[in-house]
Length: 270
Image (tube, rainbow, N blue to C red; front, side, top):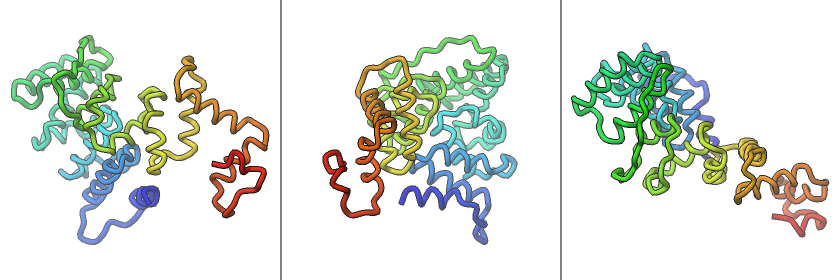
C-alpha cells in the first residue's frame, strides 16, 4: 500500500479544478515526507519553480530539504522564503546559503542578526552556524553538544545530517517513525548506520530490495569486517554467488506463485 501510494503521489496528473498547482504539489510533498519518502518529497518540491511557490509550498519544501539533510536544497528559495517572514527556518536559510555560496562576510552578519532577534538559539543556532561555515571560505569550528536537548526536530535532524554530526540514539528515539525512512535513504550516513533502519524501511516499501542489496554490498566491501551487518552481507553474497541449490530457498521464498516449495528446497526454506 505504501509503494502504491508513493507511486500515485509521484504520478503526473492534472491539478484538480479550483486548486493551486503549487499547493497541490506541496500537499503531495508533505505527505511523502511524513511517509518517510524524503527523496521523493524533495523531487516533488523541486518540480515547482520557486517563482511559483506559495506559503504552503515554502513550508513543504523546507521540510523535504531537512528530511534529506540537504541544506543546499533550501538556497533557490531562501531569499523569497525569508521575505515572507512567516518561517524562522527560511530566515536562517538565507544566512546558511550565504555561507555555502562562499560569502562568509554576508553570512555572519545575518546569523548575528537572527540570534539577536531571537529567531534561533542554542543548538538550533549552532547547527545553522556549522552548516554556514561549511562553505568554501568558512573557517569556523563549531562543536555541537546535545546534553541539554530533550527532543529531535526536523531542523535539528536536517542540519546535523548535512554536516555529519552524530545524533544520539536517545534523541532519535523521540523522533517520528518517518525519520527511520529518512535515515535509510540518506547517502551521507555510513552504510552501517543506515543498515540499522534499512530492513524496517524495506518492509514499509521505502527501500526496494535492490537498494537493500546495494546497501549490504557496500558494507561487505568496507574495510571494517566486524559486526552483525557484515555477517548478513556475507550471507547475502553467498546466496547470490553460491550454487543453484543454495539459491533455491531464496527463489521460492520470494516467488509466491506456488503454495508449497519443492522438496529439495524444504530444508532451507524460509
